[in-house]
Each structure stands twice: as structure tokens, then as C-alpha cells.
Figure 1: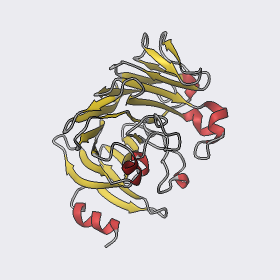
Figure 2 (figure 1 turned 90 degrees about the vertical axis):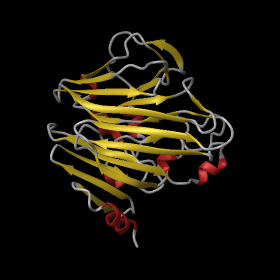
Figure 3 (figure 1 turned 180 degrees about the vertical axis):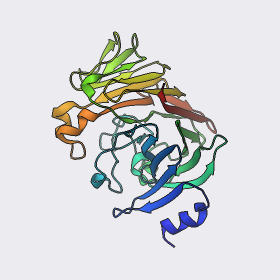
Figure 4 (figure 1 turned 135 degrees about the vertical axis):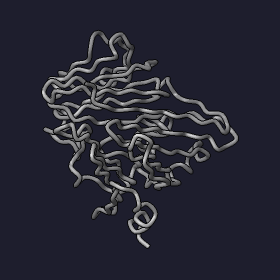
Length: 301
């Protein structure tokens, strides 16, 4: 029985949920709800698209689907960075941002939430990369709730007999009218590592505006963030818990032009605001301990 038939047999009873298998053999979960549409990929275990029907354009940004390939990170929606953020701390040959976004995940549950949301649980499948590192005794699942609010929880459990440390992020790409005409509120006064300027420690003054390549890891912040978009006439609210870091990124034209799945134009319509535990904000879990990073995205009135 094909993967698609298995999912349809198990979860075909759920209203508003359908399944698709792409030419690249990626299984997609589509949600067409009276209040919202969304797409989730079992490749990478990530939300690819989310659009409340109150919005004329999607809230999440996506690269051209022609670039979505099995076994490669999909630049769209909310990729999962785990069990490390950025480069591996010691092995430079390991994949950037870990292996969770390179794995095929399993759908373990689909249900209707109390408020009418579509709730989906995904479990990361075993990975050959996991067997190479100290984290093969950890499990990872993501719990996604799709409604007018999009909620994503990343849940790590130490199933081994020794403490483990992880860094992680929900690497959200947001659709904006023009990167040069937005601002991000909520991080003024916070300290950050400037990834573009030799990892110098700096302090954010006022709201964030963009005039060039930006890569900042804000440390020790629990703050909610707001993307204020004058062109699209909306404010995207980002609420988080279990996260001590926030990462803000836009590659600008020179860096974007070197990326096959981004290119010289698309960077103008996206910004990443990532809820994370990165760099010094690593998470240590003792045996049987569990950690949950939760983010809620909504349109602020």
C-alpha cells in the first residue's frame, strides 16, 4: 500500500483534510477550512503554507515548489532546525541546522480541536545522521494546530541514560510587501550576535528596519515580536514560549542571488523571524526530561 493510501485510510475521515503525493515523492497534507488554508509537508515535518481567509495574500513565504526535493531542506513556511541551530558545534561536515528538516516524518494523529482547529501530530523518523551523534536517544515530535491562529510545538524527549544538549529553531519565513518597508517590534533594547559582522555582540536600538543583509541572533529574550507591514496593511504577531532566542534574517540581493531556491528577486518579499534556543541559549535535558518550544502566529488587529 502506498504512503498516500495509508494516510487516506487512517485519516480520511477528517473533514477539510486531503493528501497529495508530488512528483518528487513528497507527501503533503492540505487543509481547506472555512476560515483558513494550509499545507504541511511530511518531508521535513514542516508547515509550508498558512493563510487565514481574512488575508488577501499568504502569511508564510515559500520558494518555488519546483525546488522542493526529498532529502533536501525545503525553503518554505516553518522549517525545523534540530538538534543544532546553524553549523554543527564540532563537525563542519554535518548538515547546517541539523537533520530534522532533512527527514521524512510520520503522521501519528489528526483531529479536530475544541475551537474547530485542525490538529496534526508528526513524529520524526529515525535518521542515519542521528545515529552518528550523541542524540540518537532523543525523540522529536511536532504538534501543529491550524486555525486563524497557527500554533506549532516542537517537543524533544531525552529517552537515554545521559544528559543531552540541543539548540533548535522554528525557522519561520514570512511573506511581506517589501522588506525595505517593514519594521519588527519587540526586540528594542535586546542584545544580539551579528552574524553579518564577525559575530560581534551588539544592542538593538529601536525597532528593526532593513537596508542590507541582516542576520541577528537575539539572546535571552522571551519577548513577543510584531512584523509591521504597511504595504500589506497587517501586523503579524509572533508569540512564543520555551524559547530564549529570536533570530532575524534576510539575505539581501548578493547572498540571495547565490541561492538556487531564492534568487535575485524573491528576497524582497520575505523575512525570517525565528523562535529558537540558539548559541548560548542551548537546552540541556536529563534522562526522561522533555522540552517544548511553542510558537503562535496570528494577525494582530
